[in-house]
Length: 457
Image (cartoon, rainbow, N blue to C red; front, side, top):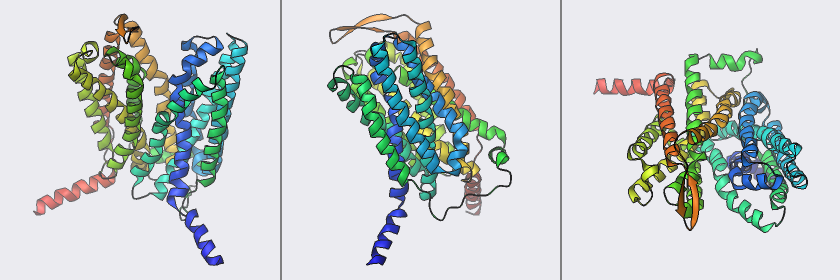
């Protein structure tokens, strides 16, 4: 009887779904709610008596510190995933609770600078650190447990990050309307407890396979750079640039998504289309990475993302889809196709980075290398939204359009100019993927084998 119990216990302790996939989803579905910011940003601004523009920096700081904490704390994740996942749990849930407190304080003292700074620190800095460490912690573990389908495994977790917005958005909207006066700060305090429980459960379950032993290096201070320099440095720079450009373009379009949808006459369907785009974001994370498992060179996925994005952006630019879309079914379909594809490619870019890096540099220091690469996310978080906002403010002019009995202010020409910037960047990214990022040894061997087979035939 005792042997049966021991066998069952060892069974769940060595189950890749329980020790890797489920905890990864618990962590990523919690921290991914950072992308719900647009749902409550105006409510925060109104409640604390500051402009929406002032409060928007909290989100930008969160993404910046996500990338920077991943870059600087990657070694901690490499050495001890339990320490890093606990740091993530405490920082994210604590930051959320702190944000709720400073929103409450701002409501008691409208216009308070302390409340605004407190939100920056809690939502931007502390939650940002939780985001970075929480994002990294399960990735290597998943690739170790699912060594034959690394793309599927990382895609599953990162899809949880993307799907979090689609899952949490209606819940948050319901809480905002159902909690009455002060619902905004009450929501943060309640969710802080919920996400702490979810992330702490993920922290307890997360575990690397028993048969995995970390490679030992004599000079650990030089290990990461020496691994990166094991290939031409231009190769790593190319991967970093591809990742940065893909995020920048994604954020530029996604940040203007709601206004573009209104501009083409679909104001009444903004909520539905935003949910569908979030599903494409999550689907791209899972689909593109799982598809990459079947390819000899994972960089092919990035080439495909860039080519499709260039084609769709070019078609919308040439047809003036955003400016002329209202009432034209074909142009509306093209604009929506572009929005959905950019979301899918944005998500796919995230899920393919760790596996692409592991193919090039091995699994030994993948958490640290992945963390350094996520610095691209930090800088894109500061530049993507702001680039699009500057273009819309600088080019074109605002006009009033009627939608469902309401007058809405839009800038069709400005949104169209955003596409000029993103198509140029996508072209640069495609060139980088073709020129700088070299095929892996596995891809070269497969190409050579194919060539020899043709010669023999």
